[in-house]
Image (cartoon, rainbow, N blue to C red):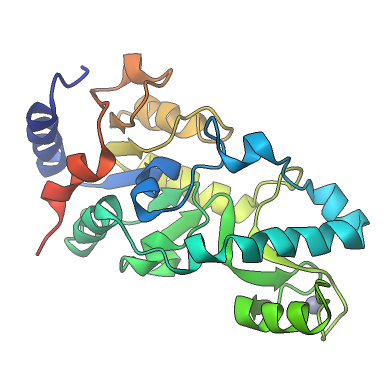
Length: 254
Ligand SMILES: [Zn+2]
């Protein structure tokens, strides 16, 4: 059913969460917009104005690597200062209460971890933009370290001091294959739940679309909370077309 208004939505959601044993949230850009993180894929979003750098181009061209770091540091104000929103805090409360074993997210902003969910319990399908890794030896580098070298060299992306591999934000770029371990963990989480919450995702970008279906097929109830309708609204047990922070804030434990 599509909730006719917010109080009805919250009442139904509370009942479903109370009845569930294992709740698994799947989150997309919509949960982070109130935190000032832009939805890159939305109309007017950055990727409709500026073509994203393909992984193949990143590997092939020094200019593209420099450009990709230039763009990343230009967005640091948004990512660096962002704090968890009401949606993140509500999910962290349910996590602390033992209802949520882990969160699957399409977001790269680290805000689930910042809200108090252990990094081990956040499955990131598109990686994380708040740190970097060497593409060869997988060594982790923090952004201030990268920035220092980027600035000192007049805007050149640094290579790994250990192995001379390319250093890239720990995100999954266009043209880069999906992380297999994360996909397996997301699948296992999805199959472990009896309530699946799809929050702030349009559920069109692969592999996002597969998870609500898998949960449903496995007998879980499905809730979709998203500003716009999705093509899975028909099969959902509850659909909330409302502000995510407003729908989830009653679940924040104080
Ligand atoms: Zn390396």
